[in-house]
Amino acid sequence: MNRTGTNKNEFIQVVVFTVVLVVFGIFFFAMPHKAISFIEKRKLSVMPVFSWDNLSKGKYTDSLDLFFADNFPFRENFVEFAFQLKEARGLGAEDFAFYRTPTSIKPPKCGKTKRDTLDDSSRVKDGEGDIVNNWIFICQGRALQMFGGTNGMALAYAATINKYQALLKDKVTIYNIVVPTATEFYLPKEYLRSTVQEKPNIDLINNNLSSGVRAVDAYSELLAHKNEYLYLKTDHHWTVLGAYYAYKAFCRSAGFTPLALNSMVKKSKPNYIGSMYDFTHDKRLLDSPDTVDYYIIPGNYKTFDYYTANQKLAVRSQLLVEYGWGYGVFLGGDFPLIKVETGVKNGKSVLLVKNSYGNPFAPFLAAHYENVYIVDYRYFNLGLINFIIDNNVNDLIFLNCSMLANADWHIRCINNIMYYRNVPIHVPKDSLKLKHDKDSIITKHVDSLK
Image 1: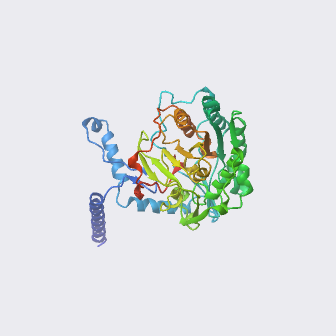
Image 2 (image 1 turned 90 degrees about the vertical axis):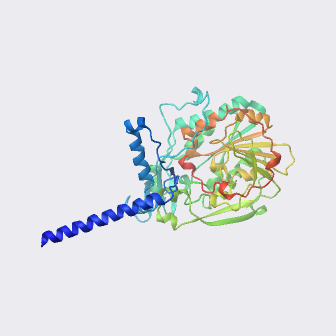
């Protein structure tokens, strides 16, 4: 009797297991396979190309295993569920948590040339390497990245900026802006030992710049307003208000009168959940959405995005892409090169070298220059020195957050873009039609993974 019951149970288990395998097999072949995991922020494996050589070496079967693992039916849902289980992990407190994020994902290249390495003047000293700290601390509905800057990286960053000064000399005025992250102002005192203080690191950079480089003190301006909404809570970026105070500090260094906040129209995009939630999937962030504010800069501007590898193809765009999602409203995302032709007839041109942290800062420059060039050092592949000379640039601004000013890969990108070949910028006549293809706009940025 017991044996009969056992056989029946075993038979049911086999049938259920077989049905599950068949159903999931049907789903595997019937459902479209995704190229990217938006939860994990990485490319998924593709079906490997068969060859007898790869089969004999075991590479084909290994690649096949990765393909099936990455394209398992409903995989994103299972991964999402796994993130939710992390709530039970960690330090056991309801108000805070630490997360270790995945290894950063970098863009394909920041450029490889015959001078693809830093020279001795900007090489990291004492064996110090890339220090992008991948610990995230969540407290009171705000995510903070732990800073791990070193003296060696700070000196390497300053040396790279100094190389531009040595090459350009008095042809341009160079400004350097290193912005602290939210961690510097909002990390609770009892956790200060978990991070490196950012101000001494920023001061070290500024104190080691050449006499011809103007160090903009954005730190003091932000500190004076730290009780305001300067940084997004669910994202690694700052707000437009934080960027505005850095812009005020720049104007003080450059001798400009900054735009008053009440001279601009303020608009908002509510319910934004940013990159820090993507990394952690912590419910505390989901329950504390951000509002992305932006200011309409007065004036009439013509803005052009340059997409292609040689940056010849210009597409008409906007300084503020109001149909963009969240942080993507600023410039519409990240492009190798953006040119803004303003109504300011003073014959002056500025070039801003930035990553996505500079996106909400850039529009303010249109109030002070006839031409504004915006370069993302991660994607730009023209020779920046020749570009500056050929386009009669007067002012050159480097803007970075302290986290990435201490990252070897980012320093190398800033160094490497000096040397590419240059194509002078001329707006093609067929580019004057305004582009409204929302799919071409990067609406959700992922820089800290870079």
